[in-house]
Length: 207
Image 1 (spheres, helix red, strand yellow):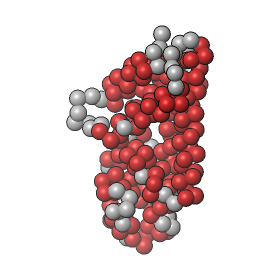
Image 2 (cartoon, rainbow, N blue to C red):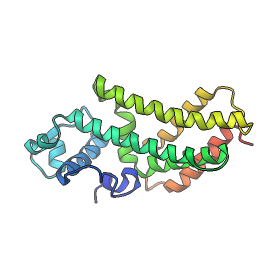
Image 3 (cartoon, rainbow, N blue to C red):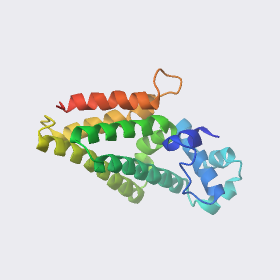
Image 4 (cartoon, helix red, strand yellow):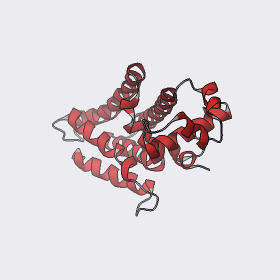
């Protein structure tokens, strides 16, 4: 199993919605190539070669290299949004929901670090229309986390002077895990998730 298959969302079936098999293989190859070389330095020949296919075969499933990046980014952001919405909707205090949201979000970025690096750091490689769609998804991600923090402030659980700025700080902290996390490091994705959840609760002065 490839790195992208192992780590995308932390499970081998992360790209199960991508069909047929050839399209999925090409997408996984693109994730690995983009993460390793960057979008602009990667060619369609590079991607096809990693997938064990001819360059011509790629165009049967994806019209352009950008279409591949767009699909990777959309799927990744939709998964991240799903994770955060599930945490936000759970029963419990704002502190419990925020801790759950942060730990889950961090685990996704650590366990799926190869995919997450592409999803989070190649936004500017997309064209205007595709970029606008992804920016819209990012705003929804921001709104979910901001909503939990606002709930905590309203209930008296949190002491936060700048909700918008704090939301940005929380998301930045979580996203950056994809940049530095390594399976050879001292922590597991679960341990980093627990650590960051504790740090964020301290940031909002949770009572």
